[in-house]
Length: 257
Image (cartoon, rainbow, N blue to C red; front, side):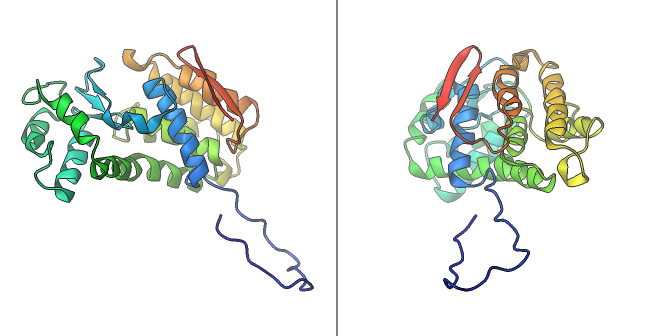
C-alpha cells in the first residue's frame, strides 16, 4: 500500500528488504468488492450505492431495516445515523423522527415513524450529506472494527471480509451470536495466523461458527452468503479476494470481473 519508493538505477537493494504489504480490505479496490459482496446478500444487487434509499421492515424483529448496511430502527444504529445527519445538517427531513427513534430503540415498533418515515428516508437519500453519513457510520461501526481485528489476527482480505460480513449481520454486542462471540467460538477450534495458526484452517473454523450463529435465528437461517460465497473463495485459496469472483447468494449468481 502507498507509493513505491524511487531508488537510483545502480543503487543496491537492502539485503533483507521486506516485501511490500499486500492490500487489506481497506484498499479502495478491495473495499469496493466488499461493498458489492455484502449488497448481493443484503439487497440481491451489486449496485450498493442504489441502497442509500432502501428501507423496509423485513420481519426480523428489528423494526425498519434501511440504507447501505441495513441500519435498523430497533438496534440503535439507525438512531446514531439519523443523529449524525442531524448534527451535520440541522432541520433535515429525518431530524424530527429522532424522539420516535429513541422510543422504539430495542423494539420492532413503528410507533411515531409510520406512515411517513419510509418516504422521508428515501427523500433524505437523495442528499449527499445523508449518503456520506451512511458511509461514515458504516465505517465507524462495522467496517473499520472488522478490518482492524482481521489485521490483528493476521488475516488477509478474505478473512477481513468474513469478519466484516459477520459484524454487519450480527453486530458486536454481548450475546452469543455477536461477532466477538463468533470469533471466540472459532478460537476454541483453531488459532489465527497471528497466533501461529494456519489461515485456511482458522477461516474454516470461523465460518463454521458463523453458520452456527446464523442458524440460531430464523431470519438469518439461509447460510448461502457463507456456503456459496465465502466458502467458495476459501476453497479456491483466494485469500486476497482477487477478481474474477463468481458466487451465489439465495440461488442467484453474481460475478465481479
